[in-house]
Image 1: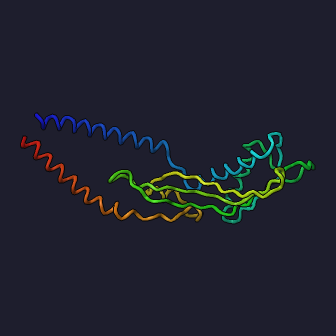
Image 2: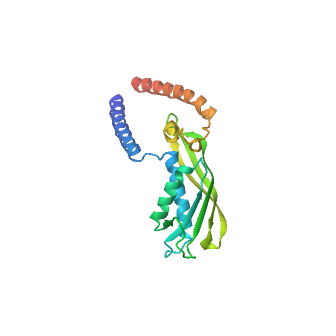
Image 3: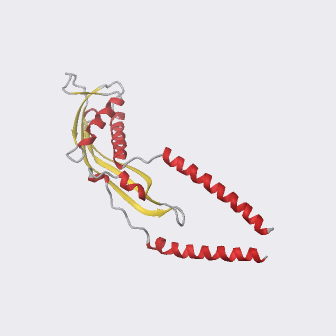
Length: 210
């Protein structure tokens, strides 16, 4: 009787676990993580939004100078497009209006750092924290002509196994040093597996004897 009771609920657990795994897989497909390069594009968007917040809504035209260097030249078009999305038109030459703001952006650096590796459960997937940062300064003539330093960081968590897809070989700043798995994690898991298997065997024979 007890064996039938155990088997009944064991089958329910198996069915529930199967359905749960399907649901998790579906959610992972829906919510794909952005690549490191895509994260940097969102950081430059945040920078442009910050600069535009310092300009009056009525100010539609501006002169823009970008000092991105060879390493970060690919952000140029994205920065210009973001100004357009904020309702600002970039002039090639001064319109003659002395009040047209001049924006000079200097991107000094961008990079990715990874935090400590963690595991989702005893035998789960390895995850790692991802720190993506851009820093530099900009000069805005409309807001007093003072140089403003900026550092914008985004923190999220990604799967270690996905890093090879998230990094870009063509752009070194999208790559970071991956820390090794904690020693105790790798050492303890075989012991846990052996202990769990032993407990299951003891429980099985105990139920049968009763």
